[in-house]
Length: 288
Image (cartoon, rainbow, N blue to C red; front, side, top):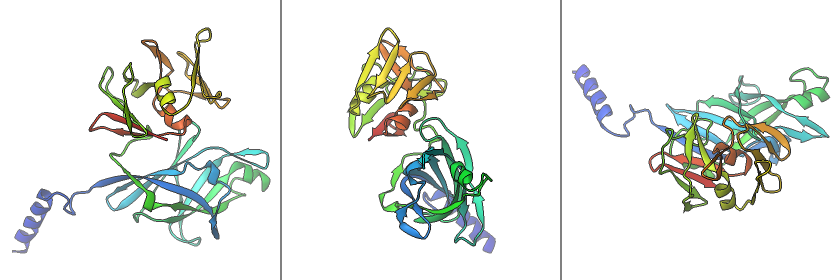
């Protein structure tokens, strides 16, 4: 009899949507700050280097966090967060290092870690910054600092799917009909976005001007300048300048029907905009 009840329960769990046997997945963009250890009302020295939106995936009762960091400047030195350790609880608990992945753009490194609890407001961490290590004698980790990652779940935004490091999925090559929404307004470029080498390319002038940034074209140099040299791109080149610093694209800027196209991720990483992809409606959503 017990076996029959168990069998019935299993079948019911498979049939009923939302039953506990179905492992759901929720994805959030959560505001995050890096706060001083012992003085949580004050920003940590590393806070300006932190991208203040974390991507959090909740699955199987666990939370997978992805946070991004850029290089930082202090005391006339340029520093980089080389290692990030996540404590299980307080300062006397076990800690584990994040999984580090280099990424392109201003925020050059992604840190991933898993937590057994959902929607934590505060997580104790230890940071290693190369410049701080140098000031403390040069040994790796010599300048270790503790801090808190503080998450504002009240302002978290649920997103439609679990994207990879790319802010939007690329469509199959040649696919048309993609829509672009900028700050809540649906826009229609005269030349549609397209995909190449697994990346979605968009018309840079169209997007930049919709975000209130001017665009200049130098035909002699085959060069596009966005803003006051915020970005400088050359056609058919993977190299570009972002605020005077040379960086690299995985797919070069290209021309199509008189328009300059760039990978979509360039928008989110360099123009201060957030990019999401709604696969159901084939829509790129850009907000700033």
